[in-house]
Length: 166
Image 1 (cartoon, rainbow, N blue to C red):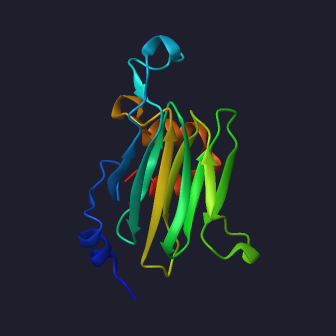
Image 2 (tube, one colour):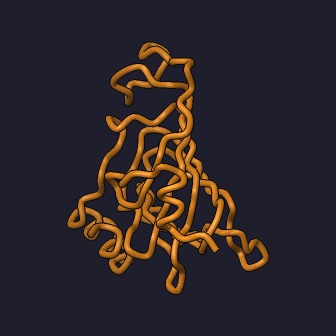
């Protein structure tokens, strides 16, 4: 079976600022002008973007939120736990993977403005995912979660907030 190190090499992945490894595989050449976008966007955006995203047991996708909707796709490896934290104080844990019979989801939609973070489930080695964002991803739209604020807002999720805000 392929290893995380081989995937990093063969797919030309680099460290992602939020954790894990990635490579942008698509950026739509069609651009949405700033005037066509909601006020939450500071500048024009590509219509859509896509990346490979690799998590290992030593990494996580730190809690963050985006200005655009994001779709995660599971490709290969071990299941991933994803945490969603909603503005009303509620939370949801999902498992991204291919064992649909046991409740795993091969695709997960993360609505804009939702705090999200994820990690390879215990006993796993790595997970190769994809992420598609529309309007397209721009680092200007990325907001990192602050541990103290998230613990205050989501006290029932303390263990996962600590794990996902290293």
